[in-house]
Length: 161
Image (tube, rainbow, N blue to C red; front, top):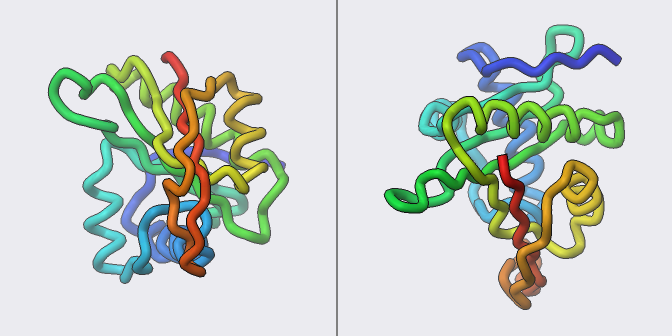
């Protein structure tokens, strides 16, 4: 499978929003509660330091957002979020996105990537992050409220760039 990762363009927004919204609506990975409209997607993705899209056969099959985790004296630490189209899971696209984001983050001058809220039940993400060299920082019991109202433990991760 020949998946390429590149910076997103305006024509990618409908597919990006659809993939992003499927994760938001699943209620077990992203903190956002409301799906993105096309207009909202344009503003949201444009506000990131970088957005990469995984493309296969001229269609977007995954994406990531990259932005500072904080400001000022902690502005050298970035954060990223990833999502892959449901039909394309377990094909290595997530790993390709993670690797690209680490490279882009370093090129943008970030020194560390930190994930603030990986839901403990998200076993595939945890496996991927650990495989790609991320280290666990700790856990916060009840740190994530799922779509069903239940609270779940989150794990914090980091990776030096």
